[in-house]
Each structure stands twice: as structure tokens, then as C-alpha cells.
Image (cartoon, rainbow, N blue to C red; front, side):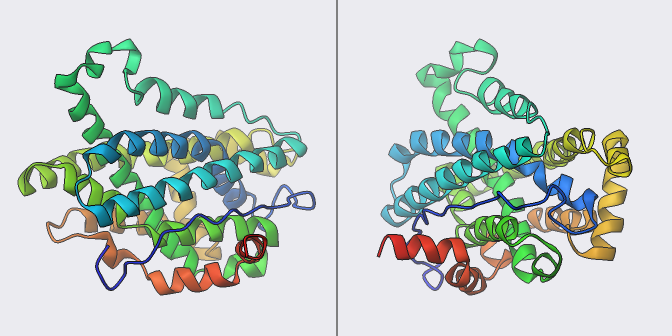
Length: 306
């Protein structure tokens, strides 16, 4: 983080109660509800993977300020994972299976683990560091989107108007923290790369992998839930192929502002291409902290720890 933006990244030990949260927590908008709810099944495994990778990277960090940022990032991501895991019980309470989590676990444990598909040579000293740095770069690309979505959520006012208060607070608390720590993954990847050219080329190559996978897994998570919806009209979402879902994302996002549009994600990807790109320019830390100061769950957590 820049000096102007630097502050202690602290974990907020929040809790949420979804006992009264309806299945379509965004009123009259099953498409947005299911697409966003798919995140509950993807993030728990993903964010624990972030933590494992970053714990391995910590010994390589020679900048003390960055080391503290990475530690704060790990603590925040661990709580994100735990709260979205708890949100899975809300889906199950409405009769939906969350078996899709097995795909997320396969992605992060089997493909992106220390020895993907049993390739133990990646655990040898000659390869281990490079595989670790590559995964740090993947996290940086993913965190670009979480930061962009975080700022979108900070600017959004339709969730409070149309949504269930508990679920809205879960997502806005989480996304505010994504804005708060949006520079850490990028700075860590840059710190571990040997050259500016290598850093630039590798982050572009990694984004070429992350962007389509990000779209695919978010879409598939939403589809897997929509297929099980008791509402026949909502179940049609589960029959949409990825191109149709992206078109629907653009249409629904433009009309309702309950979900970010596909064009917003495309513009965010285009900004990443610039050699001058830095995530500090992708969000407003003070705006995120202002939400965290008024978040009911964050306020309750602060009171408990006072």
C-alpha cells in the first residue's frame, strides 16, 4: 500500500444470522440472487487456499511493512472463508444442495495444490519457489476482480433497497474488506518477481487464465443453484449456457443494478493490461472503511472485542 493508504489490516470477527433470509434475498430478482449465492460455494475453498499459499510465501517477504499487510490479508481471508461456509447452511435450509463445493475444492486442492495431480517434482526445491510465485500471481489476478467488485458494492445502493439485511451486510462487509486490502496481492506478486518485465508479462498471462475461469465458476455456481429452485421460472436460469448468462448479466445488471455488468468486468480486465496499472487506483479505502464502521456485523464484532 502507499504511505497515504497504509493502515493496519485487522480481522473483524463477524457473525450473521440467516434464519429469516428468503431464498431470493434480492426481491423479485432470482437471477441476481443465484449468481451471487454461487459465491458461497466457491469462496470457502478458494480463500483457504489463499491463506495456505500466503503462509508459504511469508518467509520470502523481505519488506517488513508488506509482511504485516500479508499477515492482515491472511487473517481477513480466513474469516471470509468461515462466514461463507456458514452461509451454505442457509442454502441447505431452503432445500438446495451445495455439492458444487466439491468442484471448488477440486480446483484449489487438486489443480492448484502443492503437488497438482500428484506432480511431486513441484515440491522439489528447484521448482517449489516458482510454483509458489505463480500461484501468488494467480491470487493477484483474482484479487483484482474482488477489489473491483468491492468498489462496485460500495457504490451500490440497490441492495439495501431490495435485499435482505443480513445477506446484504455479509456481502458488503466482505467486499469492503476486499477494497481495504486490494493492493496486497499485487504488491506481494511484484515483490517476489525478479524483474519488472517478467512481472508485467507473467501477470498478463495469468489474467488470460483467470478471467475466463472466474466467469465460468461464478456462472456455474449460480446455475447449479437455479436448477434446484422450486420456482419453475427461476429454474430456467439453470438451463442457460455461459454466453447467455453473460448476456443476462449485462441486461439484468443494467436494468436493476443488483449485479455488476459483464461490461464492467471487461473494462476492469482492460485496465489490468496497462504497464502503469496498480490496484490503489481501483477503489476508495475511506469509503470502504466508512461502510465497515456502520456495518451491523462489524459493529457487533467490535463491541464484543472492546
